Image 1 (tube, rainbow, N blue to C red):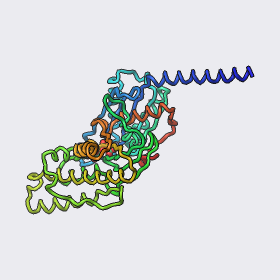
Image 2 (cartoon, helix red, strand yellow; image 1 turned 180 degrees about the horizontal axis):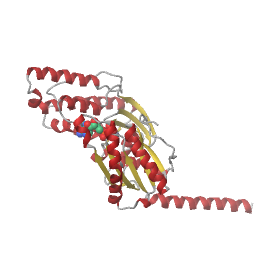
Image 3 (cartoon, rainbow, N blue to C red; image 1 turned 180 degrees about the vertical axis):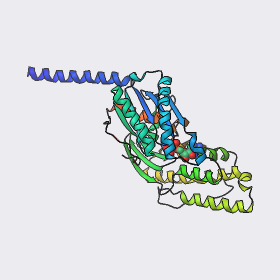
Image 4 (cartoon, rainbow, N blue to C red; image 1 turned 45 degrees about the horizontal axis):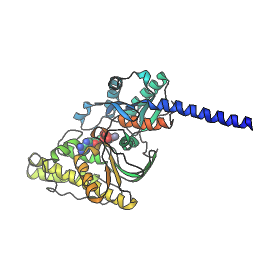
Length: 365
Ligand code: KG4
Ligand code: ZN
């Protein structure tokens, strides 16, 4: 009996020691996040959920091609990755030897771009003999809401997230950090593509989304009504709208060659209004179907001023609780990768060095 009590006591004692060690380790953890899925090379250091640095090198090289050129993107990542990481460590005021783990984007994204971040993260983790953590880029857009920020409120589970980016448009039910279910998604173009392709029709450079937003500020959103697509209850379609805009512009320019220049603000406001109406209609359906009124937005297009405004109004008028990310965590950035790294680090959810990049990684993987 005495023997058994001693064993039990020793085991509890050991567990307490392990717990203290783990708490001490995680208390002052430094996670380096590396993002290289598309055309932004980014590195960020997060300590206990707080961002110490978030460096982003945009690749100007694609602007003249009207879209991202994969081969040029991976080459630019190779050139940028070392200086960007060095800058992130410098701004965080830490040495690489103080890092607790390396988190990197495994997918989805452009294979050549993903490979640069993946191989760099692996080598660095091996060299420093610290854990490697793979991160799903789409989950990261959503989980950016859990970055520790002063005066920011975080969603509680379950919540609905509208993920709107250059490559994705999804309504996701988030039941826990890593328990997500896609309720609806685009059947063709992503919403970011709808913005960028419309901008291209107007002769604006890539990426055109922010420019449409800028010119829309001074325009009349009802000037040119475009028809909204009719697709399944929570699914989206944007390719028909793009074609409608193209035919409309071609017809108007035939009548008046200066039509775009003379009406740029109204055209942009009308396009933006139609796109945001489509998004809001689907969100209303999602709330009706699930009964969940906590609504978050994520991804590059969540930088859009109109969708941000409409969500604030929904909070006021429909009793939704809305969560709008800080501007710098909307478009691709490594802080969102590092926060997921931190959440996985707390659960000792590490990756094997044999992990590979996956271009078509699903949000649920
Ligand atoms: O999330 P993100 O940075 O990259 C992807 O993972 O795709 O999203 C980029 C997309 C681009 O299509 C860009 O035009 C769009 O986000 N975007 C915007 C705005 N800012 C960025 N679209 C509309 N309004 C904006 N203010
Ligand atoms: Zn993204």
